[in-house]
Length: 211
Length: 201
Image (cartoon, rainbow over all chains, first blue to last red; front, side):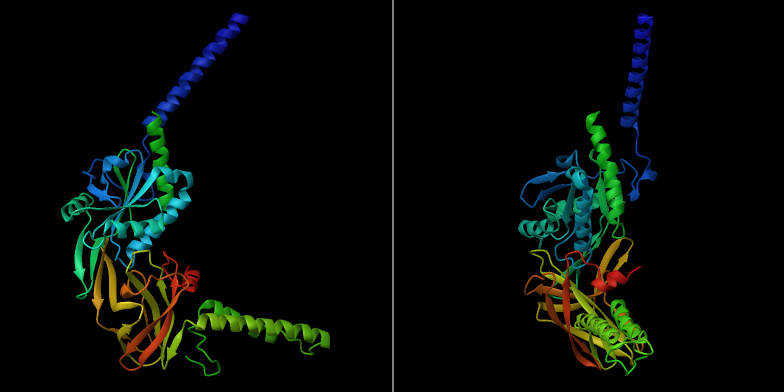
């Protein structure tokens, strides 16, 4: 009787083990269906999403430096009256709402106005919204190249002798922890929707890291 | 539309004020026909005064920011706090015109070295901004300066804008002349004047 019982429990244990391995495997292999996201889902491996820029502390930065974290990228400039502060404030609220998951998210502002946005100015500006935000700048060529990779249109639009605005795309891009450009949000995307999708992506990046 | 019975235009009042005024009027209607005993009257008068005081406080709080000249009312001028280092600010308001057509020619303010009127519009995900030389305020109509649309550009701020701060804006109209209003600075990420935000669906 005892032998039969132990054989049974061994068999049961094996079945359980197989089930657990299969479940873990499924979790790793599983891709989040696009329909689960609330932001617009981009086709994967569409084109390069890399950039070669410098952060506001003078350190050279490329996409690879942020591997392991979900990136939220917005292109803007400090002298932007309306769209940029509104979007950055929204992203600051998103970070607050994400709670501990925000540790795996990095918000980047890439300036479209390297002539006027000095690293110091960029730093005091973006960190006012959230101390964890980082501003990136570079040469005109570097910024043009980054903007091109994100299909960001930007044109100087002088309104007077003293001021020029920059007409620019106001999309917000989400890059997953593997460096894949995944989602596009807009000015109209709510804090709720950003929080929802970033939680999905940070959850997935955790599974990816443990595999 | 304007009623001379009231010292201000009820129609253009933001909802909280309307509620407050309505409340005080309702209280008046609730006076019992006999007026009851003296004690009852005293209690009632007390409530009535309190309601009136609340209504008055609301009126002062709300109207302090509004400015009317002739047939034009400039409602809820507001601005957004600026992040350190930012030298550009924006201001917004609504112009309500109960009279004939007028034109807003320019805006002046000591808060910035230069003040311009700009129009933003989003086209295919690209936000574009263009200077506007004048803004027509249609007869019996209104013009709203708001985020993502018409706005006052404060270029080269003389000081950073801090939440709760007030600064003057002078709107110069072709017919009505100069109207001075006080813009109230809202938070860093504000997208509307507070009571407008509350009233939004």
